[in-house]
Length: 224
Image 1 (cartoon, rainbow, N blue to C red):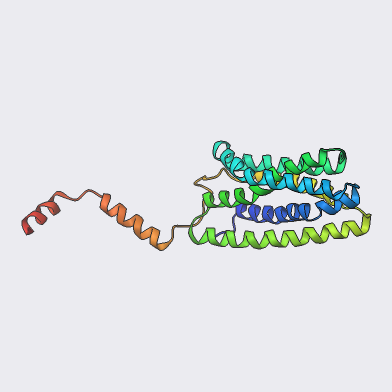
Image 2 (cartoon, rainbow, N blue to C red):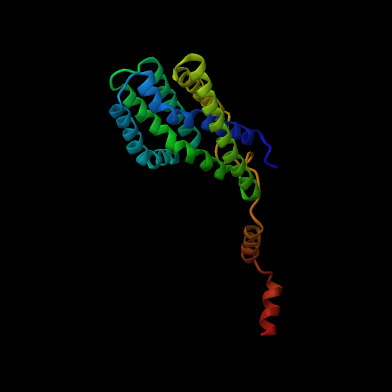
């Protein structure tokens, strides 16, 4: 029931989310200090900016998604992460790594809420449960694969820079995949059914809302 096109896209996206975003933050400090030569105080400032922006990013981006749609907001988040990665590769000088941290925070924290929000609008009941369960697994596997790839590239090239190049390419793929998703709430793409309890409640409400035949009303009054 859940093996439809948009669900498979979501699972691939969650894998790539873990592949790109988890190693991004894991190796940010080593890259800033060992690869770019910044001191520990500057690396701490970058992380401080990420933490402060991240506290408000989820609320702000969630509000925005209610206005313009989840898919478009996701594309914007992936665009923000793309720019963040590009800055660390092309122009990691001065205060630009701080700007990179701001862009990363605006993308990283909201992404993990936007994808489940999309699924909740497209799947119901047992189907939604299965989809959510698999997304958690694919995201974790993606994070493991990304960390391994980052370490491998570091050993081969001597720098984490090439993994940030890979992250930038991954965010482009994620943006393209997001555009392939159907519009959230589209009835023709919605899968799953209500739980039995919900179905019983729906049937009861429907029965109560049906008009009572006139002869039934008369019989009831006579019985009284």
